[in-house]
Length: 192
Image 1: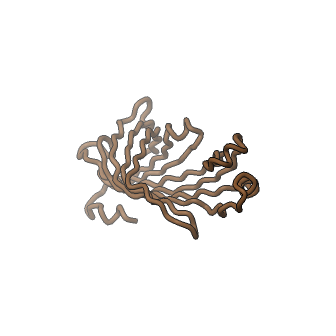
Image 2: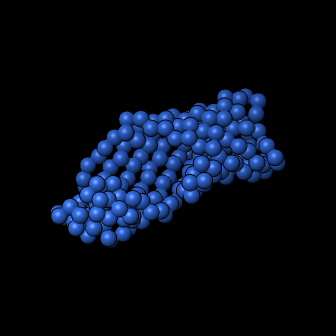
Image 3: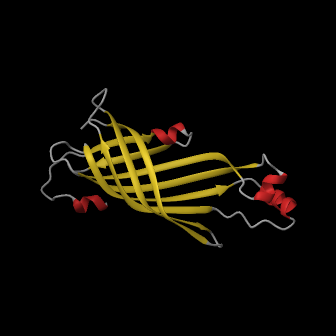
């Protein structure tokens, strides 16, 4: 793995594992799950997974005028790996950290009613609804507090800045030059 090459060969630090979830996403009924492995006192690797099944509103003006309450189902899946560096030399994987973050997101629109409604509202066939995919690459920074209530319960705040291209398969690509994501995670650290 990537973080092993960054670890000192003489390091005898014990590996720890953490499971996390983003409270902001949980509050929006868009839950995710993250796993962080701390193989040394200052370096770690995190992998996030997210699956969402929601309804989405349409953005076409003519369609909204004719069918103001039309919604369609959306399925979203994402994978987000990250590498972190903790600045504290004293506490293992607590305190201020920085790192690199990436993500790949797959969106799929599932309803077959959209093409029919679009054609009826716009008097022309709808553009095929390909999966809308996006990615993210950027830097992150944050702070992880030492255990709060119990030995294993931790709170973490993270912000990630970066570029986020979005592409529609077989169609076109758009770019968001800059994007930011905020996370407040509750963490469970397994026994060392």
